[in-house]
Amino acid sequence: MIDTRRPIQTPEGVELGLRVAGPVARAYAWLIDLFIRIAIYIVLSLVFSILGNFGMGLFMIVVFLLEWFYPVFFELYQQGATPGKKSLGIKVVNDDGTEVTLQSSLIRNLLRGIDFLPFLYGFGLVTMLFNKDFKRLGDFAAGTIVVYQDRLGKAAEIIQEPPRTPPVALTATEQKAVIQFAERINLFTIQRCSELANILSTITKATNEQGVKRLVQYANWMMGRR
Amino acid sequence: MNQDSFTEKYQAKWQQFEQWLDSRDRNIPKARRPEFHDTIDIPHLYRQLCHHLSLAQSRNYSAHLIDYLNQLTLRGHQYLYQSRVNSMSGFLDFVFYEFPQLIRQRWRLFWISTILFYGPLIAVAAAIQHSPELVYSILPPEQVSEFRYMYDPEAEHIGRNRDSGDDFYMFGFYIYNNISVGFRTFAGGMLFGLGTIFFLVYNGLAIGAVAGHLIEIGYSTPFLSFVIGHGSFELTAIIIAGMAGLNLGRVLISPGQLSRIEALKRASKISMKMIYGVILMLVIAAFLEAFWSSKGAISPDTKYTVGAVLWSFIAVYFLFAGRRRAT
Image (cartoon, rainbow over all chains, first blue to last red; front, top):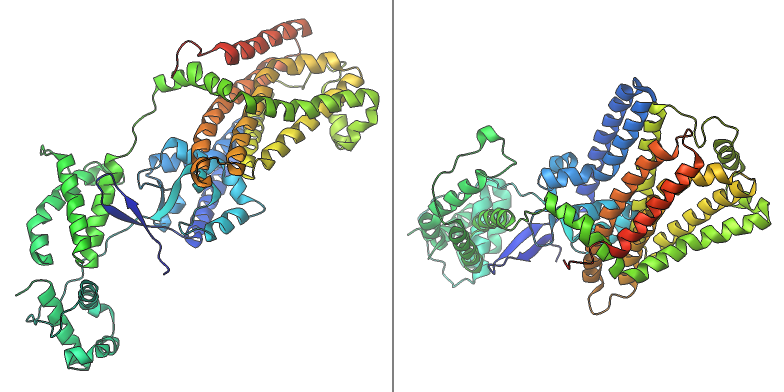
């Protein structure tokens, strides 16, 4: 199954899920960061050029710091996300889900040069496509992953209907499917809902809109509304 | 228990925990951050939350509820288990104990790295004394004449012609160039050590060619008096960057009892410590090179003396510092 959910075990023994970010989102984030750095260089080179050679020396120090430590700074002080990553809603965390540390951030960013080889993150991309966590080489060495910073949507309310007991006993997964269907009926057209509900017409003994309504009633029963 | 009554029963606790997290979340602007004054047992509340998450998962409650609890628990996990270290005393500990201890501990890597760098350097420099034209098969002719011009004993300032602004320019250049070379030498270790070996040998050859050529044409005094001071820190730092890279390459080739990835993770932590030292040493080297080595007014004898002191310092530091206390 194609799944980007990565389970992590906490010391309390529960399993948390992180959604790992793929190469496309990360490439966009990298491009945004690149443009930001280029903009900074253009502005600074104009300002520092007034100061002559002293300014050029300063400029080179700034270029050095930004090229190597720009991501490190943001990963440490902005909860794992450079401005580019932030705008894509992704961030860097340690393998165990905790916030990235100075050491792991430095390792993953100093090894960037190897991922960049032979050109434009060739090695990094190939490595990312060969493991399910989309890690580049630097991520392996540092023990980090890039994940989506989940924003919760509004809870989908299940429409109130008189609860009805399903005519057959449903397994836990089946119940979950029915509940999720009931939560999402507002996202689909009525035609699509009917189409889906008709698959279960042998159980609901109804078709089309009537079938949809039955399923919502079952969902109400499963949610414990009596 | 069904989902609705489960939510109803515990929602207040979840909201309390969420508020506590929000009050400490640096992502939320200070003005909008809620204040939290209640004295509550956070660890207990967090464990309860973990418990609720597992219950919700095993009872197949709706995806939204599980997502909500998952996210809340994740935030709690990230906040409660983040590492809070790094202080000035950690830095001093590193400089006076940990770093020299680490280099001594990995003495094999040190010697391998040293041979890979100084071997080609000395070999090329010696070979050029016999057949001077060899320099042109390593460096392009323009670069050779540039070096010849720079170290010409007839020039008013030996090394490079410059004022204080120029000094700072060169300082910036050395920081940018040398530390980047150090980082690349380290990163090359990810290619099973081959990248590191390449950078060590390549730099050894290039420096050897310049040194051999300048000595052969009789510019040895301006050249050697220029490089002896900062060379102590700079060349040793490149050796250590090589150690850091070889350390990665070694575990990638032969990870021992561990999986390759686990071995790599552990080795990179060690290598990173070496790199902290490399950065420090290269900053010192850039400082010396820009503001001391380049001063033509200082006599070569003084520079040799200071150079000898700096080299002895490096030797004494790595041989003896941090021997008294085990960390």
